[in-house]
Length: 264
Image (cartoon, rainbow, N blue to C red; front, side, top):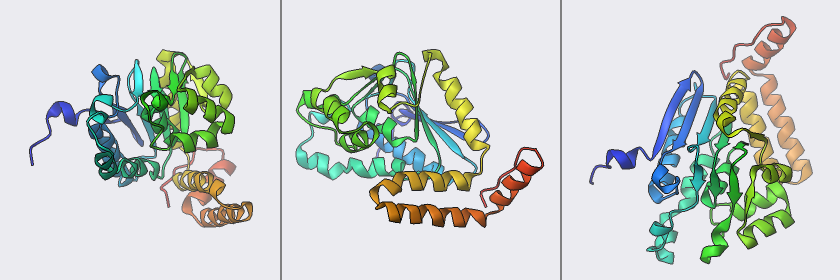
């Protein structure tokens, strides 16, 4: 099997700026971080690697100042047949990211279109620069969102906003995305990563088991009946009550000090 060139292997970077925090950075600046198969594969590999790193408690997913990810690589897609696309099983690559159990912050500058917007929506918290642009423009090239865009979007912003975005292929700015409930915070473009790191530090300082259970309940509860979802919430609470981190968090609160958590 031929070795991957350094340029190709560095299309997604894994960085560790400080203790307990990782950054997954899409790095195809000449292509506005368009998502070719290699990038999707590398993102999955990075998150698969991070699953085995219990010392990492918060992850930032980002691109560069011009683009988070400007959708699929149309040059690559144009030569794929329907069967080629089926055999790639892109959903398995996205699922590796979606199944990551700890908090993920999407730090978005520039374009987050198509597959890029879908990546952002798999994240748990979206921070956006004022100049960010969001959209699902697949209809303009004769297809539709294929990695969760239509389904995660309707759950985030409701039927009518999802219909408008997916059917027209229009782009919206960060302020409108926030008004819909898609974006959590809008910041000056040069402050997005600073805020993402600040938030990652806040998350990394909290009990990791609590964050994992919160994430699981919020992601899976809406697909259950209310009664079943409340049961999931109760069972998760009961598990956390027996954890060492819960005892440490309570003691730290009563003693007015910062807690030290081990994820146990």
